[in-house]
Length: 119
Image (cartoon, rainbow, N blue to C red; front, top):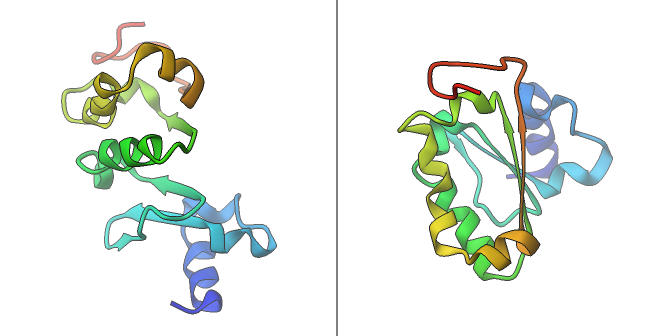
């Protein structure tokens, strides 16, 4: 896909509007709905409903390639459900020591409690 076409696609997707700054767009991949960029980009944005079955494998592949992983989970109070928690399946394959040095997570939520995450 041409860079200009990719910029147009990224500029129209809400997940990218804030992130697009000059040439950084070529480093950002999107994985949602019908748009499933290869996870070879420096930065990947995943929509959980589209990626819950593949995100764990992608993160594990990055970890095994010695790339540090930063997972930012928006609306993280939903990630305790059985379906959404699948994105964390990779954690059982990473040693606790490596989790402290190669995997970082930030959960964001404006909802302090939910049925799936009692807070």
